[in-house]
Amino acid sequence: MSAWLSEVPAFPGARFSLAFPEAIGDAAAAVWYTTLVPEWEQPDARLWQATGRRPGELAYRMTVDLSGDDAVVVSYTLTNESDRPWRHALAFNCLACGDAWDVRDHDCERHWTGIAGEPVPLLSVPRRHSTRPAVQLYSTTGAPPATDLPFVAGFRATPDVVLDPWLAVQSRDGTRTVATVGRPAAFLFHNREYSCIHAASAFGPIAPGESATAGNDLFFLDAPLAAALKERRW
Image: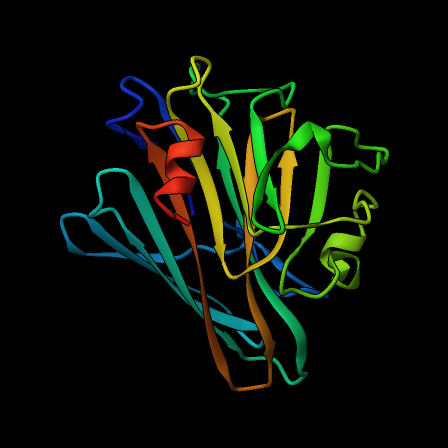
């Protein structure tokens, strides 16, 4: 889907762009969302469900839970409808902050992540510049090296470093936080051009005819990053 998230209590007047999933399926042949037209249901006032399918390749069901005041919980069930086993399956999820003035950070000066459980400024993490210098991808704890995923390797922008499964951006005044967290994360991605952060959901291997589940949590907190980590929000 491609949608706007607005009326966020911690960021009045701001809106955030969501592309969930921006791509999905086999990491060696992911299907981009522009070729999928999901069907939507709204079983509850703050609950949305979408189903999408590429015949002969994949089917998925996505639930978007908006019941929390400061979090959006996205859950997927992905089915391999192809005749080949998938070594790695993923959903590439985009949270774009470019239209949220209090948050957008094209220079990455307020971006954070974690290494071995300790928060670190993203600018302190080694980078590998490709022909698209605004783009960077990262391996995550518990997942295969990101360069083992054909979807990631094609960008040629993955440094030799392993991060915790989250990215966050603090507001300009340092009092509020936006974060994306993979459950679990296949890899992380950010693009300075659009001030977007991604935590790709990792489904692991899926055999033909089988299904797997994964998710992505988004946080919009009226609290600085240190407080969110102290409360173990992720």
